[in-house]
Amino acid sequence: MKKRRLAANARERRRMNGLNEAFDRLREVIPSLDADHKLSKFETLQMAQTYINALRELLDRSEDNR
Image: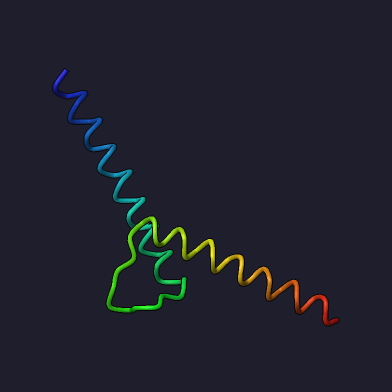
């Protein structure tokens, strides 16, 4: 039983490490107001959503001007 728990813990650790790495990569590509402050996961998702919406609006406006 202990082996299964250790294996499950290792899988969860790998999963969380992968998730944290993905958040770090996302933080690198979204604009941040304060470079000294590391965004939380929630703030990162909020900023990504805002950034995606702003890019979509920019694209929509550029297509309207054609």
